[in-house]
Image (cartoon, rainbow, N blue to C red; front, side, top):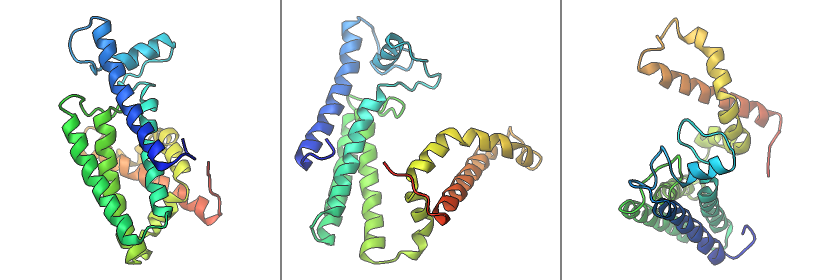
Length: 224
C-alpha cells in the first residue's frame, strides 16, 4: 500500500480497523463465550497466539495487534505524503488540525462499541491516538516549519534521525540500563517509593538520547 494513492491507503486503513474489530466480536459470538470480546483473559488475539503456538504475554499483548497497528502506519504515511505534497503550508496545517479533531471525536464515539485498549490496539485506540498525533504534528509543523523556530528542537532532531534505533533500544536495552543504574539509584531513592519507577524511566530516556546523540555525531543513521 505504500506506493498506492492516498484514497486507497485511507480505505485500506479503515478496512483493517473494521476487520480487526469484527474478528474479536465474531470470535466471541461464534465460540459461545459470554462477556466482553476484548477481555484480557481470553479473546481472539489470545486464541490466535495459542493456535500458532506463540508464547502468551503476561501483560495481555497479542500478536494480532500488528494487524491493526498497520492502519496506524498507513495514517503516518498519509501524514508524511501530506507534508511532502504541493499544498501551501497553511492548508497543510488546517488539514492536520481537522484530521486531529476528527480522530479524537471519532475515536471517542467508537468507545460505545469498541473500548480503548492499547495492548490489543483496538480501533477506537488507533483512531484516538492518531487524532492526538495529528494535533501534535500540526503544532510542530507550525512552530518549526512555518515560524522557523528550530534551534530548540535539536534534541528531537537527534532522536528523529534515528527513530528506529531509539525504538529498538527502548524495547531491548531499557531493562539492561535499569539493571545497571539501579545500584546507584537505590541508595538515594528506595525502590518501594512512588518516584523510583519514574526516575528510572527518565534515566532510560536520557541514556536512549545519549545513544542516539552518539550515532548522530558519527553520522550513523538506520533507515528502512
